[in-house]
Length: 212
Image (cartoon, rainbow, N blue to C red; front, side, top):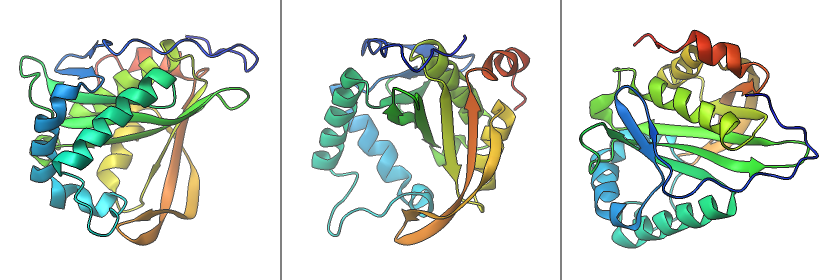
């Protein structure tokens, strides 16, 4: 689990057949046949996700067939190019239904060797510890399979549930970035969290059984 030095070339991206499993979840890259299921979960959670999401372009529907199809194709392209790694969440035994997403975006190599973590989950599954389980697994994936050195996340101060996920997994709070991202049309402050490859082995071992 040791982090790679910045002079080493980046590893080849894992295949699009990658499959991560936890006690209750399956996490995998998007497939073209996921478009219909993704539209369902996005439409069902439009109001739930709106306060935490960047506003779409004027007249754009993020859950439309065109928008979702383009997004899935972009996710697959970025995965193959090693630029970003989006994983859809499903409950074990119900893999046709998507209940959330975890993404490692903005992947940087060289001296930075990092990624930005983002995530959301269906409102019907909030409060069950599922996202904590997913973030723990994806953080391990970032260090072990992608060879990253640092994973960081930014959360609005009022989003205590999302902050709690990061705290339970073991991310450090590093400070507050003022007017960091434009969310729902407003420049919002964000609390910054991070974890590095040196820290993760002991954190991961201590959190094999995550409290729900």
